[in-house]
Image (cartoon, rainbow, N blue to C red; front, side):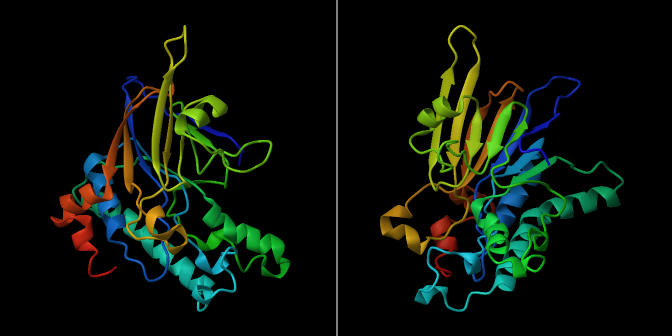
Length: 282
């Protein structure tokens, strides 16, 4: 697999395309999957040309190093993490599976979009664990993760679809750490249109290159799960959560973003606000 991947997504009609972006879903034991069903149903309702998951679908708390040895770490199990992630990905794909099954039954065309996932640092915990403890090689493996035929891209290996570069995050080549600052500052450093997850925030910036008329944008959107994370504290958990649709994707790195919150999806498919729906869980 090439470190940087281009996909040939041009259409004969040269019509603009639509991308749907799913930020970090962080499926783990004991957490609900309702929001993954909503996202999957919205995918079918919209039927975009391309769906990109930005990684960190598998949370893998059993392989965490930052809270290892603490009370909250007790009782975590690798097999349960894998089971929760696979269950969550099946939930995400269930509406598409049902739709295509009906289409086949009625001898109609199935919906077959481009499907990509750029693996995140949470999935990379599996590779890191095997590298640091060689006796686990072959026992702890990314092959345990069932991505149901989606095109998987290795951690920090970007993929370009229609002129838009996707990656879990973009590292500073000098330090290896994620670029910080605003989306506009990152856009200037990275130098081309980019979309990333990883950071639990929503930040969007656009710029036009002088003398060319070319449009570039940077998009940071790192949360598509409804619960609070203890490590972020009370204030740190107040951030946007949802998915993003890119309309008018022209192939040159330009697009019109539409932000779709989990609260909107909950009201669309459950008829109540997100806070009401999950009150019984959290």
